[in-house]
Length: 232
Length: 266
Image (cartoon, rainbow over all chains, first blue to last red; front, side, top):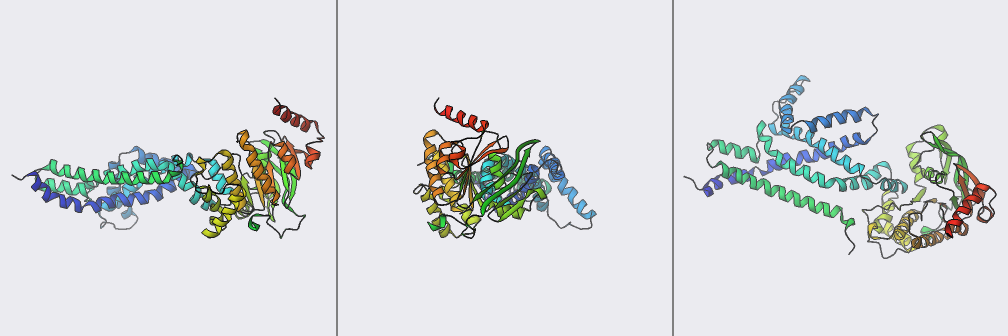
C-alpha cells in the first residue's frame, strides 16, 4: 500500500513538467484572440449597413451560443476534412493545434464583445480631443481609443483569461496532453489508485496559476487606472 | 517665448488666416447653418455670439472638420477644403485640422494622462518633436496659462478652471494658425470664469489668431477685433465690438443683448 506522499512524489513531477503545455494552450489563443477579437469588434462598431457587421454578429452569436466542447469537437473532426477537401493533407497536425484553433475562435468572439463594451463606454470628447490636436485616425486609435477601451474592458478580460486558463483542461478530450491530460493518463495507468490525490495535485497547480494570473491582472488594472486615484 | 507667439510670419499681414465662404450644414433635414461667410486676419480675435441653436458651435466645428459641411469653401492658412465638390480627401482634412487647435466646452483633457503629457502628446506624436523639445515647449505653454508646478497632476485632480487652462496650453503649444474656442467658460462655475477669460486675454495679446464662441459679452467687447452675432443659422450682425454690442442695428440682437443683461441683474 502506497502512502499519499509516495503517490504524489511519483506523479507531481510529471504534472509540473506539463505546465508549459497548459500555458501554451492558454497563451497562444489569448494573443491570437486579442488580435482577431479586435477585428471582430471593429466590424461590430461600424455601421449596420455594412454586411461585415451582420456576418460578425452571426459568427459571434454562434460561438457564444454553443458549448465550447462541441466547438472543439467540430474543429477537431471537421477542420481536417475541410482542409482535405481543398487539397491539403494535415494528418500530421497534433490535437493541440486543433485545440488552439478552437479556443482562439471561441475566445475571439467573447473578446470582441468585451472590447465592444469598452469602446461604447468611451467618451466621445476624448476622441474629438485627439482629432483636434491633429491625430490621424491611426494615431487616435493608438493613443486615445485603444488605451481607454482597454481600461474599461480589462476587468472583464481578466475573467475571460482565467476561464481560458482553466478550460485548457478539456484539451485532453481530443488527446492533447497538458496537466489534466497527464493526470488522467496516470489515473488510468494506476487503475484509479490514488486518483483523488492526483486530481487534488492538479487542482492545486491550476489554482496557483490562476492566482498568479489574477494578481498580474490586478496590478495591470491598478496601473492603468492610476489617474483615478485620490490625490495624495 | 517666441515659440508660442504668433505663427505664420509667411502670411502677409492682411491676408485672412481663416476664410469661410458659403458654409451650409444640415442635421437630418434641419438646416442649422444657412450660407455663412466670414474671414479672420492674422492675429485677430473673432467672437461669435448668439442664442443656443443658432449654429455657432457647429460652425466652429466645421473649421477643424469635426463636422463635415454640406457645402462651402473653408481655408485655413493656405489649406482649402471645398465641400461643394463632395467629400474632401482625408489627407487634406488632416492637413487643415493640423493648422488649428480647439478648446472645448468640457475641456476634454485626456483623462488618463498627466497635465504635462496632455500638452506634449500632440507635439510628440503629430509634430514629432523629441522629448526634451516637447517638454520645453509644454513648460512654456503651461507657464503662459499659469499652470506651472502642476505638471504631474491628472485632470481629475484639477478644478474646472485649471483643466480649461491646461486645455488652452495644449492648444497653444501646437502653435496653430488659429485656436478655436467652443464656449470655453460655459461649464465653469462663476468664480472660475474670470481666471479662464484672463488667460484667454493674455493669449490674445500675444497675437494668436482666435475664434471664440462665447456668451461672455464683456469679454467679447474687451478682447475681440470683430464680433459676429448669429441667429437661425445666419450672420445677423458683424463688425467691431463697440458697434455690434453697443449699437445693435437689429431688433433680434437688441432682444438678445437685453435678455443677457436682464439675467445679470436679476
